[in-house]
Image 1 (cartoon, rainbow, N blue to C red):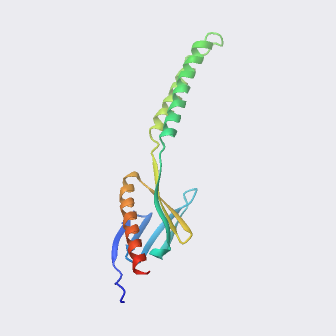
Image 2: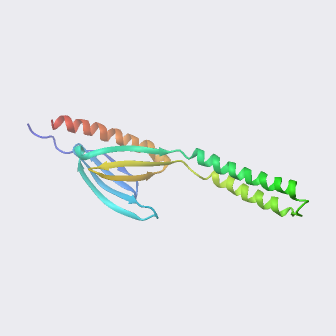
Length: 161
């Protein structure tokens, strides 16, 4: 039986972080590993589809952290004003104390709004694990690519049984 020629199914282009080409036999391309401290290392991937051990999109919701930081900001503001109201006359606190607490608490609340949910494309290639950070608008594109990998892997396994 003659083997079918290798054909390209799809390409996942995520700029500097990832450029992967899926064929009916291989997953090839370049992935940038991001290590703690911001160190980046580019690595080449060229693996037969049966060498892919796992692939998924991992999402980390940051909503609880946002709420916790905002709550801490509110506690700082209320604590500053409460301290001034309760002990301001006794210890001769100036009005600067609650104003500073208000500024610090408002900054915490403001920065809590800047914390975004996080996502990563996890790829396990023959024991080597790659975690590619994603922007939230890339998640659906990567999920569609993963579906194509699954379909190609099923077809590859059926052809090579």
